[in-house]
Image (tube, rainbow, N blue to C red; front, side, top):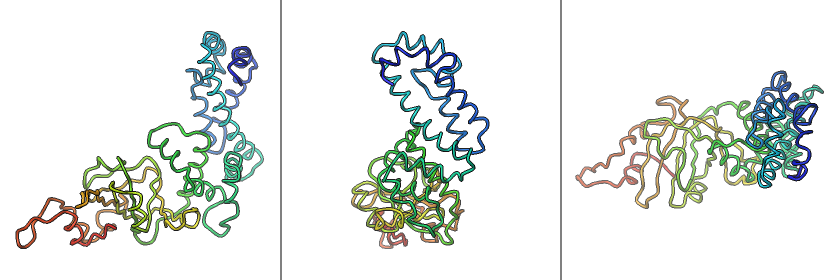
Length: 329
C-alpha cells in the first residue's frame, strides 16, 4: 500500500464492504470469541491501534470520517498512514496463524512456533528440536534463544519505555511468558550477578524497599561476566529462586545466564559505592521473605553508614562489606 494508492482507494478501504471494515469485524469476533487469551488480547490491541490518528476499529465503523481524513491529508501524512497500515497488517498476519491453528484444533504452541519461524526465519528455525528432552516447547526455546541472541535489546527497550511491542517482540514475549509460567522455583536460593552502566530500574529504590524492572532481567552465575558489563557502573548481586537457567539455550552459554521474568519484585538490601567508584548493590527476590534469601552477614550489612573499626579509624564501605561476608564479585 503506497501513499498514492491510499489516496486513490481510501473510500473502498473504509466503507461498505471495504477491507478495513471486514478486518475490524473479524478482529471483534476474535476478541470476543477466541478461546486463546493471547489471541483475544492481540485482537483487542489491534482494534485500538491508531492509523492516521484514528483507531482501526473506527476505520471499520466510521468509514466516511476516515476517508475524509485521508482526503484532506498531506502527502507526508499519507505516507505515514501507509506505513502504519503496513505495520498493522504484519501483526494481523501473525494473528491469523494463531486463529487458523485454533480453528484446526492445533496446539497453541505450534501456532506460536510457526509465527516465530515466519517472522525470524532461520534465526528462529535453528532452535527447532534442539532440546527435545527439556522442560520447554520448541516455541518457548525459540523465544528464549532469540532473546539471548540479541533481541533482548529491542524487547527490553520497548518494555522499559512502555511502548507497544512490534509483531516480533510480541511473539518472543509470549513464548518467554509461557516458559516462565511453566518453570517452578529452584529448590535452593541461587546467587547471581549483574553488571550495568547508566541508570537502571533499582537506582532510585531505597534500601529495604521493593522495586522491579519492567524488562526481563539477565544475570550470570559468573561474577566476571557482570564486571565485564559494568565497567565503572553498577555490579549487582542477586539472590532468588524464580530465574530460568538459559545457558544451554543461549549461544553465549559461557555467560551462565540466569534470566528473571519481567516485573519480578526485588528488595534492595543495600547499595553503596566501593573505593573505585563502582556501585555495589544487593537484591533479593521479594517473595523469599524476610530471612530466607540471606544470612546474618547480609542482614548485618544493611547498616551502610560509615563505621569505625576497633581502633576508632573510619572504615571504607567496600572494606566493611567484604568484612561482613558479602562476596559481591
